[in-house]
Amino acid sequence: MSKIELINIKKQYRQTEIVKGVDIQVEQGEFAVIVGPSGCGKSTLLRMIAGLEDITSGELKIGGKVVNHVSPDKRGIAMVFQSYALYPHMTVAENIGFALSLQKVNKADIAARVKEAAEMLELSPLLKRKPAELSGGQRQRVAIGRAIVKRPQLILFDEPLSNLDAKLRVQMRAELMRLHREFGSTVIYVTHDQVEAMTMAQKIIVLNQGVVAQVGKPMALYEQPANQFVAQFIGIPKMNMLAGSIKGNTFIGENQQQIPLAHNYPEHAKVHLGVRPEHLQLDRSGSGWKVFLVERLGVETFLHLRDEAEQQVVIRLEGDSPVSEDETLGLSFDAQRCFLFDANQQRLSPNIEQLKHVENRA
Ligand SMILES: Nc1ncnc2c1ncn2[C@@H]1O[C@H](COP(=O)(O)OP(=O)(O)O)[C@@H](O)[C@H]1O
Ligand SMILES: [Mg+2]
Image (cartoon, rainbow, N blue to C red; front, side):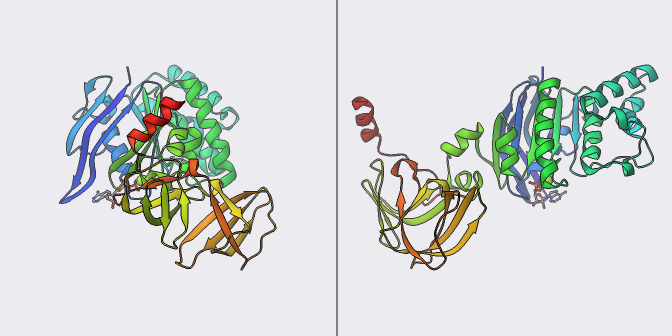
């Protein structure tokens, strides 16, 4: 029984509230990722779940029981940190088995469980080595071995791949997902990297300044962001935002460009129109946007454009594109792919009446 529930969890250091009333549910066996920018309270949240930090207010439940005051070693949780902090004088086998020897598990059982963990992590040939004789990825696997050997019902990861190079990070992502499938534990994984969240999570929890901005499956966050923060945090390059106003089903930009929308919206004097770089098209017969940077990556090209109001957008084009810097072009917007956000950065819904009308027609 390892369903995890956070109910209105708050954390205050002196006068400052760091975590401001967080509600999260993670199902048994689920791989949940908490993602957010540096300093938003991710590690604080994880440390409260592990019991390494007091909870100022709210309830933490594991398997239906309130565990706010249960000591860390009685919570059935293991944690893997960004800095793996292996014991340098111990071998890989000793590092992995250390927690069990502290628990006075007998030697034969320790050896069997270390062997099992090592096989799962492909560390068997390295058991006699010391950490100094391992690569970064191997050290990270030892740190994970140390966690899973305890057979925890819940594993917490705090930015475990941040110290690895890009290629190894990709490899370790796949490995962690495989381990999760084999091991079946509930996982809460914290990262600032939205790519890790998108590729690994069954459920993403986006955290911003100590508040949950949105919870959902990766593609749901990409396709239906609830607010401007999530819209711009998920997806690279980030979603373009243009300032303007709405009248009926037309967006009127600060540069006076009129963009037809897919629906009628309530009239708003101050909105942002959001559109992803992959959903913008070039309009070669149009004007108003000057190319100031072209990034050619082979598989794709990013064009950076600026209008007279100094607004900037990025467009992603497939493959190479015969566009040069200083060219002036128009943009064409796919109405179905545009989002609108109000002055409070919340996503606007189209007028209900019109949607009903559309549904009736369909
Ligand atoms: N022990 C502490 N005392 C005071 N402030 C802290 C303490 N630990 C963390 N903070 C503050 O709480 C905020 C969130 O920190 P943290 O949870 O580490 O963020 P993240 O892991 O998302 O980068 C930061 O502004 C940090 O400075
Ligand atoms: Mg952190």
